[in-house]
Image (cartoon, rainbow, N blue to C red; front, side, top):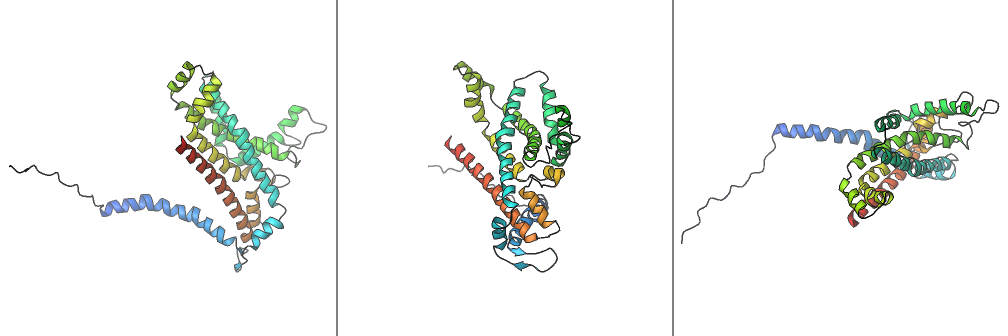
Amino acid sequence: MPLNTAPRPARRRARRFTRRDLTVLGVLLGLPVLLDVVIVWGPTLASVLLSFTSWDGIGEISWVGTENYENLFTNYPAFWPAARHNLLWLAFLGLVAAPFGLLLAVLIDRGVRFSRFYQSTLYMPVVLSLAVVGFIAQLVFSRDQGALNAILAAGDDPTDWLGDPDLNIWMILLAAAWRHTGYVMILYLAGLKAVDPSLKEAAAIDGAGEAQTFFRVVLPTLRPVNVIVGVITVIESLRAFDIVYAVNKGRNGLELLSVLVTDNIIGEASRIGFGSAIAVVLLLVSMGFVVTFLVQEMRGEKNR
């Protein structure tokens, strides 16, 4: 019986990285990781450690345990109004600005006339920083020379839109939403362009109306975009600082946690340990919202 003398395929040897390959990998991967650790995680861990200390930035660092957190929650009157304002910011951007951005994206995607002009105009505020948006808000809502009071012809008894603590937070939220809406619109426009037209055609053949087609066919396919919009909305809401600081330095009804961090760390008090405790609370709140949202979305993907 003849033996099978067919040659066996040669085993592929694992390619060994040369010194040049390792150098390139080290630069391309190691440098970004190093920068991330130094710029992001290093200060984050330092803030967590400093939140348990008392330090003015110059003298000796003394360990105080949870004293900063106890004072923050019980003896710091500005904390709870700032926390409420941050949550209000999140609710307004999430429940008003984001849905409005989705509505604009749907209208533009349907091919209305001058859609390119509308798209460019609505996206224009996104290229502006929140500090610039704050200055624009002052031009619009100023008590004496603001455009809004001029339009309302309130010369004898002008409304102090930015000075009244009951009104200014809502005016600033409108200005922030003006910028956030354009960002959300562009994200949803990109998602709508990627929706398979055959899905809409199949829904129309089955007798579904436009509203049913959107909510039962189109919107579920936008789940990845919803995740991005949700995370961005949380981040934008909790890191808000520039716009309120440009208006009145975050006081008189515009208190935010980020402003309190700045006032305690950079202000005259130089309470770096106490300011770090506020920063840690803001970090935990941000991570709590983002992680919970992402976990819910991933569970939804698995159940589909």
